[in-house]
Length: 112
Ligand SMILES: Nc1ncnc2c1ncn2[C@@H]1O[C@H](COP(=O)(O)OP(=O)(O)OP(=O)(O)O)[C@@H](O)[C@H]1O
Ligand SMILES: [Mg+2]
Image (tube, rainbow, N blue to C red; front, side):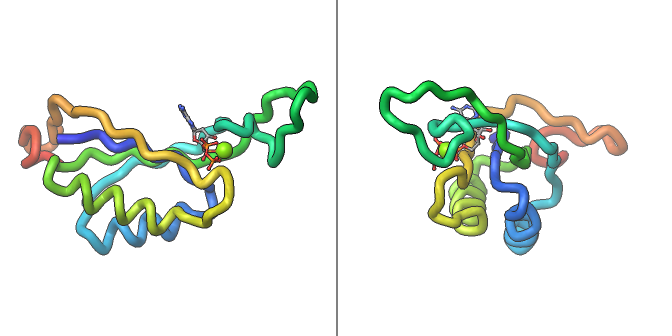
């Protein structure tokens, strides 16, 4: 299993959620976060200029998925979250060791 953590522009959340529903993703968690990437929260950086880091509002999505669905999940999120402008976000993938569905006691892929 994989834990996919995605940071996107907030206005893209609904489009990403809808596209993930269409490929059968059954659960996800969303958190409002703040962050910065290479531009450090600025639209442009000027050589030699002093600058401060600005945190920009972003949305973080976490979803636990099977290994088999990883490629489809990544391509679906990438298409839905894409604008082509800076700050479109990132997808982080980590190995997920164990999942428990509390109500049923099911574990791992059966619990997703
Ligand atoms: N290396 C990182 N580690 C953790 N979070 C990151 C990292 N890079 C980006 N993020 C998160 O993703 C958000 C969006 O990043 P962003 O898309 O601006 O990355 P970027 O590398 O600057 O790419 P771009 O040049 O397209 O803007 C950031 O605000 C931050 O929350
Ligand atoms: Mg950036």
